[in-house]
Amino acid sequence: MAFLETRALTAFYGDFQALFGVDIALEAGETIAIIGANGAGKTTLLRSITGILTNEPGQVVFEGAAIGAARPPDILAHGIAMVPEGRRLFPSLTVEENLLIGNYGRKVAGIWSLDSIYALFPVLKERRHSPATALSGGQQQMVAIGRALMSNPRVLLCDEISLGLAPVVIRDIYAAFPRIQQSGASIVVVEQDIGQALKVANRVYCMMEGRVTLSGTPADLSREAIHNAYFGTA
Image (cartoon, rainbow, N blue to C red; front, side, top):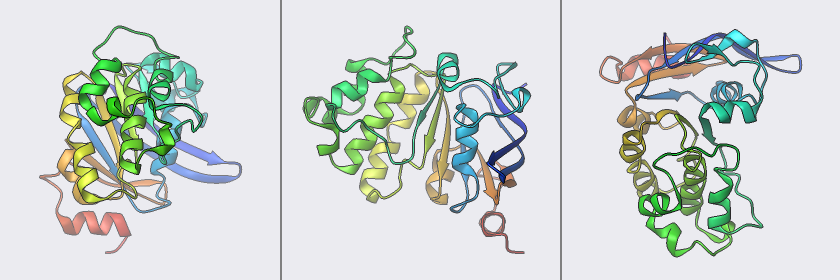
């Protein structure tokens, strides 16, 4: 049994079906990447795992427990935290206040604290008293990642963390991933950037129109196979 898995996961927005029988598995200590074009269902998958979208209990399983119908605070209490697309920082709060909110719903002993977040992203310590939205896009993304890490998660879900950022900034953000993995967290990365996904992931799932169209290790997946699964071409 996988550490975290979805089993024939379906998801709906009203009458619109967004996911069709999605099966993914995350093993303890690994990083998986979910790739696909806009509208493929990647964010919906993360919303289902985190309880933002409610599913049948057995469609999401964490350490053998069916959590598909659990509420977001209960999912966080299990140790599953998300870095949302668009960062979603609190504009009225400082950098440090945004970070401190991260352990509000899950206060457990672990490696991550303000000091360790500042060691991971030193620029945040320099700007800790600044309004979070006064930072650059890349620095705001660091705050969003740090906020999620403050809960000392066992699973970190990252939704499009490179979107809209310059390549040098993306490099700096992904450079933090080995340290995050060393802390014991397993990681799910949703990415449109195929090259970046292949660099960081142990395994890759490609989605299109709410279905998994390809999965495997980066070494086993040819660029042609990924292209066909990504765009639906033969």
